[in-house]
Length: 142
Image 1 (cartoon, helix red, strand yellow):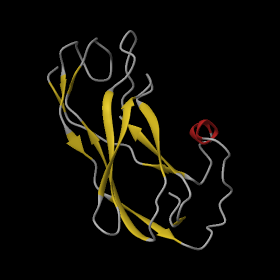
Image 2 (cartoon, helix red, strand yellow):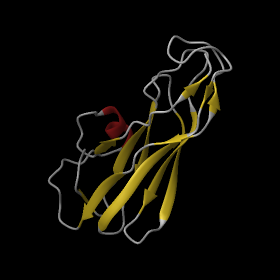
Image 3 (cartoon, one colour):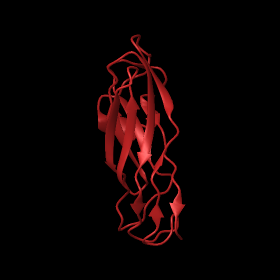
């Protein structure tokens, strides 16, 4: 995890599920990243929908120096189709939050090479500006 990062420089949060989805279900919906800044202000970033691998990215630019707290939210969902990972259509995947992590933001440059676009950062898994946090959730049903 790139920590610390520089203020006013974008960070890409990779969020999702450890389980992929099977076609024709195109992904998981309404995932969120909850960012609490050093002053206690909470910002909710909506990642809307994963792809079929179970992951997606959402960009955030910290504007204050200090320690941020970040966690992901996986809202309850009902499986639309059967797959070998999470069971039958109708299986309920329960609402869950990840454990919080801290993101330190400083004024000094970090020395990381910065990608030029959001799309490039999303593809470049070795890019140090990508902050990974996978949200686990509990499956209820078969």
